[in-house]
Image (cartoon, rainbow, N blue to C red; front, side):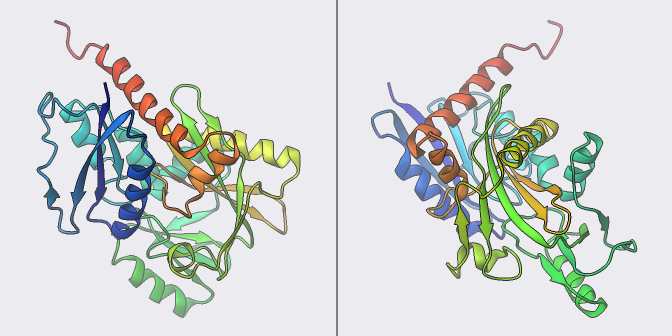
Length: 318
């Protein structure tokens, strides 16, 4: 029998359009011999089409697994994962804790730092940075580089803070790293694996929203041009970051490598990475020997396995 896969996409975040593009790729990539796709589109206002998945166990008996393709706020931050937990439905990607912690750049950095993983120095907006320009100003909870600015002086810093505060009440100010940008894909539950990393070569000062999705000028190198020991270390750090934040299923870990020192930093972890035609998460796995269709199969299997394990646990003494 075919598995009935509910694909959730759209959503209220600033990454609404990217979510639509990712969902179209996923729905086209699911094997029609194995899966029946049930699309659930969520408008920018939060309206569901068709009716919402209700937060009651068994309320959608026809759905076997959910594939949330909701980037950013109200989809990648633990809110949707909480709804799906209440509904008692298996779903692709990390759970509530991993999703929420990974989405908040401040909490993410605290967790990584506590585990001894390398992160760039930063302060919360309002505190005085003890590092020099350039700096990066970022909303704590957003993705696809929305609301992020690179600033080179105090006037630019003030304007960037105002811009970032449109997207989140918590904003971080981070030391600017002059160097190279990399990405590494992670897949798995209890025994996660890392793909071969790729390098991102922006066409602008950094890999911002326009460079990612509009200009079509950024370049990628897959595999990344790294020494074997650097490649191994990046893959190791990607898996350690995945474990530290308690991710499951999938994540993409982004890195910075400082030119002056050669030091490698974990920039962030994305729990629902892009699946568009230009997205590197599926491309890295394809290069690593897992083609797109097989990747979707594995993600769905991981979701069902995790759900089966959770269902075997007791939630009361009776």
